[in-house]
Image 1 (cartoon, one colour):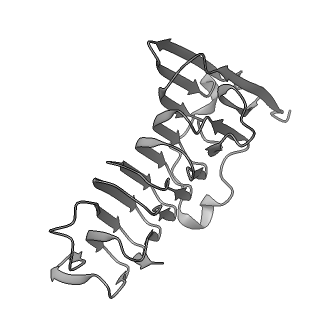
Image 2 (cartoon, helix red, strand yellow):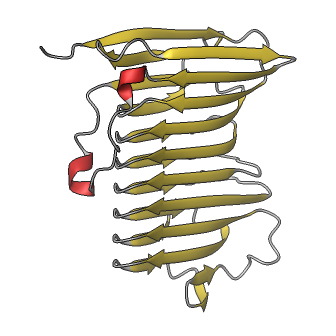
Length: 248
């Protein structure tokens, strides 16, 4: 008998929350996170698909004094197997998809996990202090927010491709760590950003925009990095794929 795909609607009230920790585990499914676009007075909304035999996803919202933690978990049947896929297998991903929309006026600390599906995070126009996103074998695409201040972003795939776009207008010291066990990894930076880059690949090529001069075997740096108040440190690596830093 086929394992039917069902959908659970999500809508969590804001109730004066100004900062939220969002902890997501969608099992082997695909995950998309972006911003609420209609000005809805909610903290988060969306749709969470699940397999009938898997059970309804669990959720919990705990808030106090303007701070909140929102936890979303796939049902007990949704995390079987290792989740690892080689890059050529990753596009199939899981049999279901979660779509989550977050309030852009609330400061977010986001942890997003899929055991094997694709992950797409469009955080443009949002306020994000920290991001940890990973998948066992799917592809990950991340657009980081504009005007980030002190942002720490870690983006990892066990075997899929990883793409990270950094927003413009950053403030303070920021950090990006992007890696894949076997796929290609690309980080795109604003054209005039001050950056130091640590780039390695076990079997693939390392391609760095020429604006960043080489300072040692695996490190590249813009001329203004040491004296810049606003900058980013990037660590990019792959076990078997190519790694690239592009300036746009």
